[in-house]
Image (tube, rainbow, N blue to C red; front, side, top):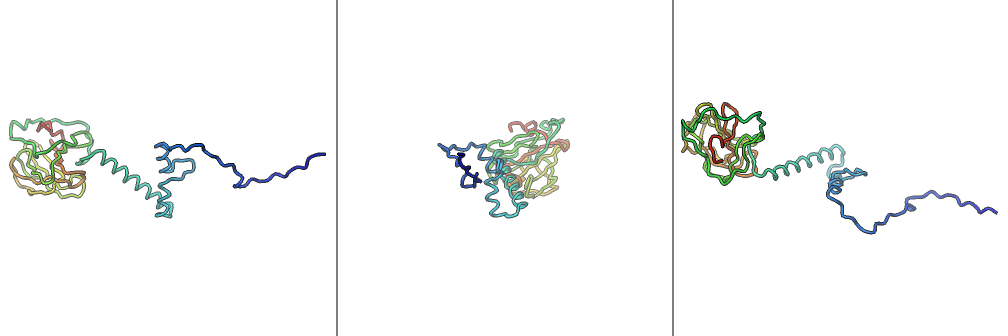
Length: 225
């Protein structure tokens, strides 16, 4: 006699076997980052979980997420570069001054500073000389005030002087400007006071020296920077 067949039963959610781990493994840093931004098999992310609370629409969440990543990356960049200032400029070469200005006029370092936080390179067109806010700034040599600017970004409050033989100098991130365009200045003239205006993460003077409109390393002219 054959045994009666038992009809197959469709397994439901309650019938699925449970997987039990003997121990809990701590996620690696890579796994945590993947979970934060949703780079997982499920596609869910910790960041998205909290964004959904404030931005119910998908498009708004995407924009907010990208904005948060951008701001976070920018803050990390600022913390990595510390005290920075001046515009970014990539130059094909570092032009050296043709005229030896030191034989024709007195030159000087324009500020008493503690250290140079960032020097001249392909991505930074001057020297950043760290000094407390309010430190006196004087010209590197005699000349005329070509321009003064009070900007919220870039160099911030800054002065551009014109000198002999096609030289110019720029003094950026000032807290005060004490000269006016067209004014003649000597090496003892107080141009202004150092500060942290514009694109800056701390009080310093951004010193830029140009020859025929092209920036070059200030240490080639001044030395000791």
